[in-house]
Image (tube, rainbow, N blue to C red; front, side, top):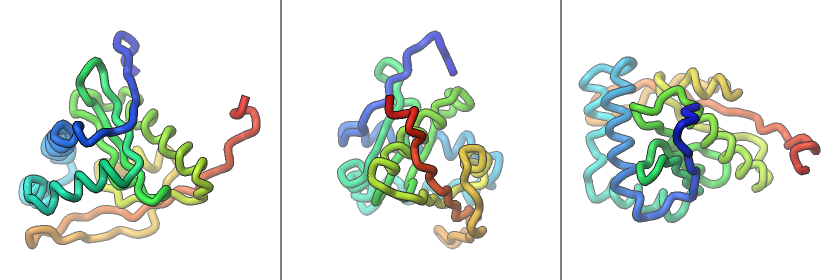
Length: 171
């Protein structure tokens, strides 16, 4: 973790929409290109600027449990929990990978799911994100092929059983 700067984790707001979309696009085009070819990356991000997709982002920010991580005024990561049990998004800025940001965001979302009495978290996870999800306890349920813009993208349906919080954590 970068100890020279203070990372703040807060609830996502509708005013974060454009910055979250940019972080999403930048992360996919820079980080995920190691696991997906140019056609796959382009298909993945192709509908991000459409009106239909904008509404999906608005719905995410207004109907899901969204947390953002930021340093000063820059958003460096975000996570979204849908229906208390599905991780819809988890992205960390390309310049802030492997600094514990995804861990921090995930732990807070897991605690929120636990607070909502959920017992299992699920996610559809890219090849790029799979090692992180496995590290925090997820297991692959099945390999999936998603078709976007007539291009096949592989991802993984994953799940994690949420363990009850130890009593010592309530102190």
